[in-house]
Amino acid sequence: MFAIFIAVVLATVVASVGTGLLSIHPLLAIALNTVAGIGFAQPLWSWRARPTLRFAALGIALGAITGWLYLIFALLFGRY
Image 1 (cartoon, rainbow, N blue to C red):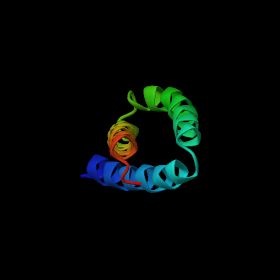
Image 2 (image 1 turned 90 degrees about the vertical axis):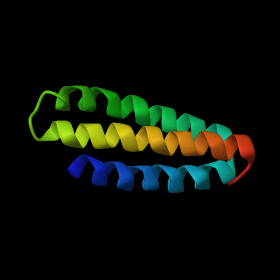
Image 3 (image 1 turned 30 degrees about the vertical axis):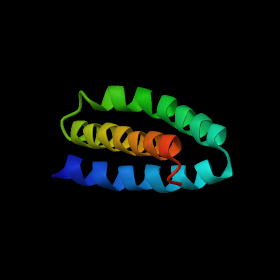
């Protein structure tokens, strides 16, 4: 449940912030999401070995991927 909660919250945040960035300029949204994804990669990789933090890492990864998929579809179909 903890991982699902974190995934839903993070997907909502990524989709909301990303939609705002898409309305400014699509390249800005792509650049900032890429930088954020690269920045989160190393801590998430180390968290997967810790008993409690592995669920947070799973939720963050799933939420970010879900939010990015939403942004890709929004960009392709002009729903922002």
